[in-house]
Image 1 (cartoon, rainbow, N blue to C red):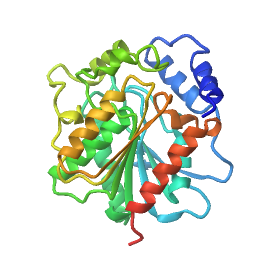
Image 2: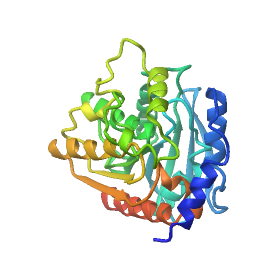
Image 3: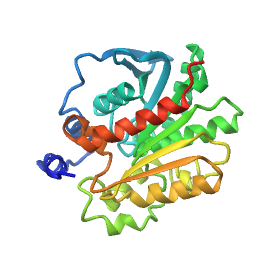
Image 4: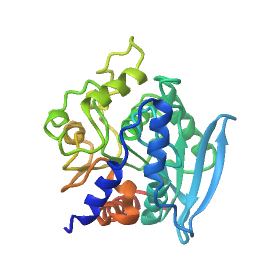
Amino acid sequence: MDDHEIVAIRALLGSKPRPIGWEARRQRIDEVGSVWRVADDIKLERVVLEGRLEAEWSIAPGSDPSRVLMYFHGGGYCSGSILSHRRLVTEAGRAAGVRTFAVAYRLAPENPFPAASEDAVTAWRFLLKQGFVAANVAVGGDSAGGGLTVALLTALRGMAAALPACVWLVSPWTDLTLSGTTLDSKEADDPLIRKAYLAELADAYLPTTIDRKDPRVSPLYADLKGLPPMLIQVGSAETLLADATRFAAVAGADDVAVTLEIWPRMIHAWPLWNAHLEPGRLALGAAGAFIRHHTSTG
């Protein structure tokens, strides 16, 4: 693989000092995530759930409107938005041939756990009330959004509710105890995620009464039996590599069908920059094929 594209993305990410404060961090992730705008042929539609929870539909020409990818953005539960992840989500929908439903769940520290998890359940119930069939729905997320995705699945299973057809996780943050060995061994390689930064995010997201091994916030410690097939994609150059590989092992041991892809030299959530990063487009293509395979047409 020619590395000039990932080198350019690294340069983009390092072009400004790391922001300080939640508002500045949120502005920065929106800026770098939306540096390349959504394709002109994508149709977008804003929706508000229960008068407060914002979400966005998108669909590319030729996609099946009866099948849906519901997506939870990353950002450590404290930043990220529909805007920052719009290019990723819409191109994932194109690759899968489905419409997408991006959810702007509440952020910490203003809205700590369990606000985001409650919003995820609200979004799922909204989809079913709209007449979508669970077997036609995939759920996905990157980083903290990946952890939130798994938290939704285990919550639905606990309620004996219908589960989605499949799960797509990109660079998932699965262990808020921060015990993964690659948090240290990959720190020099990862331009985005540092252990100290994750500790700050966890402190902001979790009330002091919550055990950081609680499976609702650290899916690495969850019982995953009965969950739908999963595709996990992670870069070899990211500190959360061990969060993905250990989670895949736990899911596999619980008899979940798991596909784990480790992408050489890729950084955290690299499909965000798919417009100018071929491995980002290829990863979305693989995710699209996975979603196509596991969602039905009713």
